Image 1 (cartoon, one colour):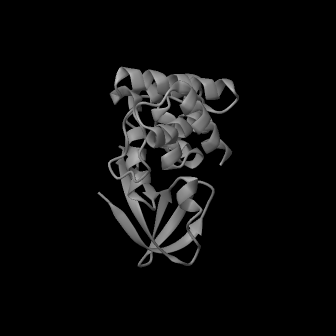
Image 2: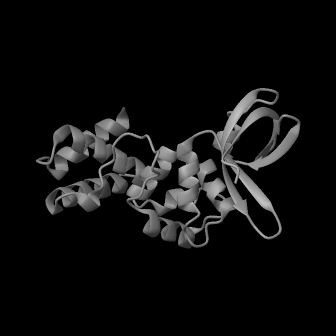
Length: 201
């Protein structure tokens, strides 16, 4: 199994690249976030996820362990193959993906090509509360492990911000930050006000 490739970037395409390793060209499919970091003719190191099938061996490359780990997590969901996994990572960077899952924001996932409402809902249901092992993002409040009162107050604040026209993910993050600042004693009103300040900033 190939775990990583170090070589020279030969070509970069729309959804793939070719890595020249001592004269051997490896075709590697990758998310847009990885491809945008590569420069033709420059050296590069890619972390590789190898999929072996009866008819072919496919290589999927990532510049960070976080992206690779999310790819592994995503492809455990029924209906999410490598193509959809790459599309999700192209549409949502790891932190945005984590936020969307924690906020149960299925709509955000539908920005990825090939992800409709039903599949997005399944992804949220199966992966909510999970993060990639190597994920390095700012702490996110998981309402499922909060005491009931705090979870209820935070949920009400998120709902209020959504009703004001903000997206679920951005409302969730704003309330998360407000909750960290104000503590468990914060009221719904206080969280809404602090959340609006976060969104304005």
